[in-house]
Structure formats: C-alpha cells, structure tokens
Image (tube, rainbow, N blue to C red; front, side):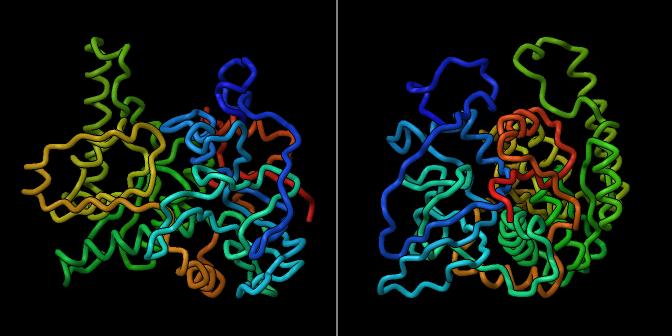
Length: 382
C-alpha cells in the first residue's frame, strides 16, 4: 500500500489501494529472520489501513509504501540469531506475533506491519522480521495450517475474555454463570470469546446475518440470533437523520431484539456483552446490559467514537473493558491451550483467497460478502 500522495488515482475501493510491486529490504540483522509467508489471516486492521482510518499508516510511519499483513503462518528460511536467545529454527512453521513496540508489561503499543515503522507484513513472497515474534506451532499437531493461521482472533479473544470475566466476578463473586447470558455482535473474535464463555458455564448467544453463519453458530453450541430479523438496528446515517420513518423502523428493530435478549436472559439482560462493532450499535449494547454487567471490546468494525450517559452507567454498575491485542509473554501459553483443549478454528471454517486475488478479498471483506469468520490469503504453497 502506497501513501496517499504516492498512490495512483483509483476508484476508491480498498482493493484498488493495493499495488503489486517489488519491495526491497536489507540484510538480516542480529535477531532477525527471513521468512516465507504461507497463509495470512485477513484482519480488521488491514481494512482500517486501506481505508486510511483512523490513521494513514504510511503517513504515521513516514514511509511511502507499507507491506501490510500481521497475522498468519510463515516458514523460517534463515535465522540470524547472533548472541540472542532465539527459539525459532530454520524450517520451522511459525505464527507471526503482531507486536511492534511493547510497553514494560509486554502489551502492544505499536503493531507490526501496521503503525510500527520499518516493519514488513505478510503480503509479500518473502519478508523479514524480529525472530522473537515467531512462535513455532507444536510438532505433530493434529490441527491444519489454516486452523493455526486463524490464531490472531483466538489470542485476542483469550486476553479480552480473561479481563472481562475477571471484572464481572469482582461484582458478582458467587453468581452461577448458568444463570447469566454472554452476548456478542457477530465476528470471529466474538465467536472465539463466546466459546470460552460457554466453557465457563454461561449461556451464550450471538448475532449472525446469513444462513451459513446461523448454522455455523448452532453447530458450535452458540444460540444464533438472526440479524436479518432486525434489519434497521444501526444508527441512521447523516442522510437519514431527518427521516422519521427510518427512526421508527429502528425503534421497532431495537425493541424486537431486546425482547429476544430478555427471553435468553430471563429478563435480566446481558452479563457480558462483547461489542467489537462500535458506534452504530453501541446504544443498544448499553440498553441490553444487566446490572453489574460488563461491556467488553478489543476493537471496532465501524465508528470508534462513543458516547454514554455516565450517571446511568454508574448507577447500573456497568464496567467497561477495553483491550488491544494481548500480552506478548502470554503467547506460548495461549498456543498450548489451543493445542491441548481444541479451542481453535473449526476445521473447514476458513475461506482462502490466492495471492493474486487479495484485492478481491479486500473488496469482499469491506462489503460484507464473506460468509466465513476466518478469511485468509495464501502467499506461498506449503
């Protein structure tokens, strides 16, 4: 992706922002590895980068061109360990951990192949990166490479769930999770998080907007709430704000959804609401919450500026959890939990685009045309 100043004119679609080009990088420094990307996971941060919102990553990094893609599976071709303690060996198949700059506790401040200057992503036939970011997948694993390549949504969900559940327990220490509902707006991270909630004994439900996704949720033990039953949930656009009929349709859709949530929660509301959408649905999220409930987010699909009535949130004792990525030192433990407990993307749940179809993938993702929660791109063959 080139900077706005350097980019050629195009039709404005996200796919047209990408350009196939030669990208040069220097020799391996100590602690770096040359890698061959195999499978990349298409994450929301790529969509944000192509939309140049909330930031123009090229301008933020001070670079004319950026190679995106910071979640997926690579093969280590060459490792320059030097005097550093490096765990990865040449030939290893590894997960790329998307950490650029971390704080003193190991949490991400800047993200690899996004806003960290000088970092190179997976949308390249070869790339180089810090070897400390390469986490080998277990030898002899029973899971497929596409299942492992979806790890980013699961690692993010793990961290967010631990914080959300911990906060909920501070206020209702003795409550039985079986009497409480965890609800999520649709998405891959929310799906993974609700599986953890189900393991913890909660009732779980999630919205879905297609027959494919409704069936997928049911097959995985999650109550599917068909989003198509409530077609006007999103806030009216600027053009629609004076349309009284549009507002009435929204009130109808919201009431009908809240009735469903009431039935699922025995009238108490949502104990933990996973909301990675943002502004268009945020007022509904808060309205649907139970007392002592937690609203938890680790990103946004649309609209990151939110407003709330603080007094109402205080009186209802709502806790707001916001997380980003996860803690780098926790990565091996999360991987090992996936391997031992099978908390991993269901086999065959992915949708893979070949490398030359990446612009098409960008367009399909931006326009909601992908049925899978785990869209991917194949860069090199195994």
